Amino acid sequence: MSGGIIFYLIILILLKENPILFNYTDFLFMHIVLELASIIISASIAIQSWIVFSYKQYRDRLLYFSGFTLIAVFDLFHLLTYNGMPGSMVIDSSENNATWFWILARFTQAIFMVYILHAKVKTVSFAKKRVYFLNTLLTIIVILITFSYLQNKLPVLVIEGQGTTTLKNFLEYVISFLLFISMIKLAIIYKKFRKTVTLHFIVAVTFFTTQ
Image (cartoon, rainbow, N blue to C red; front, side, top):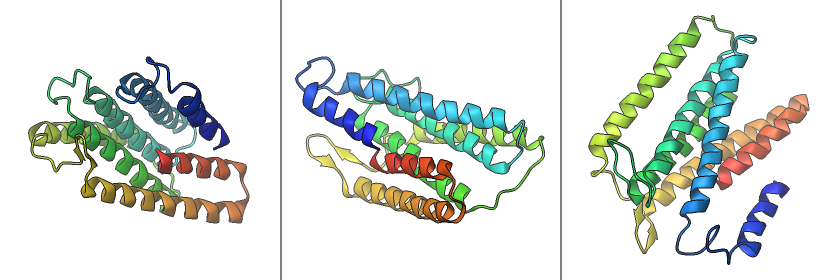
C-alpha cells in the first residue's frame, strides 16, 4: 500500500509537468501503460491458476482462471475503446463504451472475489478444466456480441465536459461494497488461521477498491 501511495505521489508531484508522461489534457500515454499492466497481471493470474490446477485440483483455481480471464479481456477492450484509441472491429471507440468495459471488469472482479471467498473449497475432476474453459470462452463471445449490438443504446456513464453520471457513481459504490465484504471475510480468515498470504490478499483487495 505504501508503494502504491509513493508511486501516485511521484506521478502527481514530480512528473506532472512532463508533457509526455503527464498533463491535464491528455492522459492517453499513462492510461495505456497502466491498462497494459492491469491486463498483464490479470492474464498472469489466470494462466497461473490454470497451471496450478494440474497439481491442486480445487475449484477455486478454475474460478480464478475464469474470473481473471474475463477481467483481462474486458480491460483489453476498455483500452481499445478509450478515447484516442482505434477501437475494435465491431465496437467503436468512445468514452461511454470504454467506461462500460471498465465497469464490467471491476464488477467481474468484485463478484468473483466475494463468491470465491464465501464458497466452500471443493476438489473437482480434471475434466472440469475443459468445461470451465469453454464456459469462459462462451461468456466472452456472448458479452462482446451483445455489446456490439447495444453499444449505442447503453445508458450514459460519462458526460463529456461534466463528469460521471449518477448511474456510474452508483455502480462504483456497489463494486466498492462488494470488495469491502471481501475484505471483511479475509480479515475473519486471517484472525482464524493467521496466514501471511491472507494479508497479501487484503492489500490486493484494497488496491482493487482504489482502482
